[in-house]
Length: 265
Image (cartoon, rainbow, N blue to C red; front, side, top):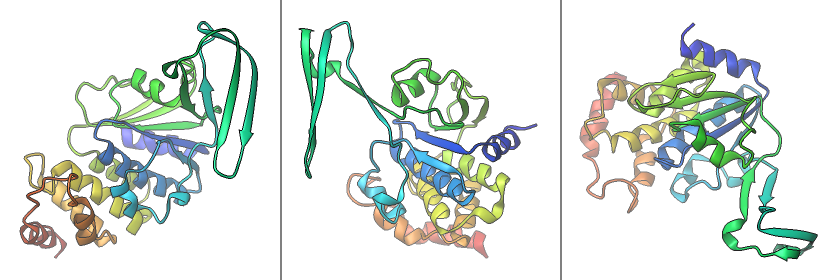
């Protein structure tokens, strides 16, 4: 059984799914994570996107920040070896929550306090853009044993990936194409405007608007397919070519548009 079939089986059997995008190439990883988020929602999964925030320039991919399901449980950790806490209390107002810790011994510095996501384990954790397991555990939970019994679907495009998942979809090139092929293997009818826009955004970020040497004929074919499914090429380019996001010189839009629409014919 190939990795796409194995991944499809994992997703079909899972009820509670977390999607964790890597912090390297954050915008591309989050775009593809959003595509999977929309897909799993359509499959009636209880899905959470584990990310501190969506970059402002990707807000056009979601109807509102409230639309996304984030983990509801957060853990605040203070190392016992540096302090002994005798009392915890809090004040809650309309504007903020303050937590007070009373120490019997020792002291606490800002760097001693850490925050982590979710206290309950998902059926399936999908990682996007991680090379090894230690990077995953560092982001999602303080407890190093937290991931011991969690099924992981590992999606990455680096040759040095440590293959830490139960199923590993690893191939050089665009992560968008890997996620695209995964969704297509589940059911081609799942593609809609939201999913297509997220994947097209990832393709454009990866290929620097289809201008760098990473761009292949398959990249253009995937882009054409996504446009057929409702992705808005012009809208995506307008958002992504704001200052500081993609190369300031910008693409030759007519050349790229013609290239894609040749395939669409």
